[in-house]
Image 1 (cartoon, rainbow, N blue to C red):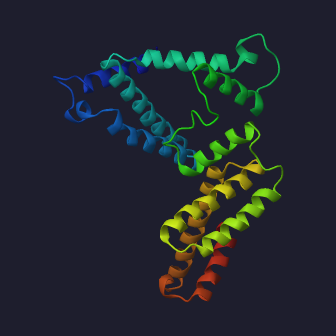
Image 2: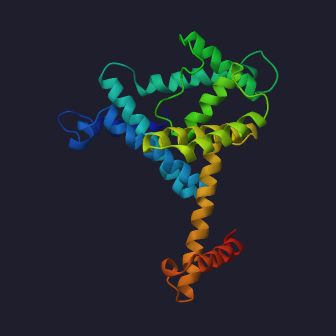
Image 3: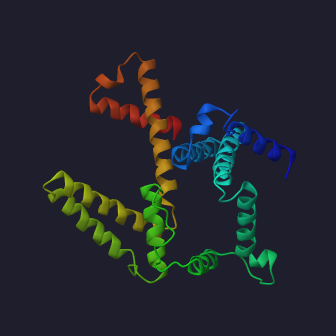
Length: 254
């Protein structure tokens, strides 16, 4: 391993030392650290979206520290070490790229990649196409993965008309829902079908929604800036006036 990797592992070992380590670090376990791991992954994605390479370098370091933290706790428990983690991902990547590291030819297309991962799941004892889709994934991302798995075994509408008709059906059920519990369930069905439609166009729904969120926020902040520059209190404007600012913001910031 590199000098800096060794240094990081030594820092983590010292932080976790039962006698001389940090009180906070020694008190942590896998469950308490997991939320920080997820948070750091999102911060990496945020830095990428902002194209901030300096910030990305720092956020990747924070995420790497999370890997080291989990590996250290596992080593203390006698389960595995950081070296085992690195070895396993290296072995996995070599096995998943036989056209690079083996004798097979061709290119890595989506279907080939999924076939390799399906073989891995089968070898590990998976019995369902749904096995291996992490429960902790964001709901939109998990919906996308579940539907891709179902489609691989043929459980899929033959064309776009099917999910579009289903969307209309679910929207009607949402409008007719009598209780909050019913609305929650049907609203979930609406989102699930929308994910199916978006997936048919080859678009990642999580990525698409993140882009739309960013666009809406950018335009809204511009509306606030424009109205403030004209000594207007945006919150007190009527909807027609606010819409005028919205159209201006669209022209200004896209």
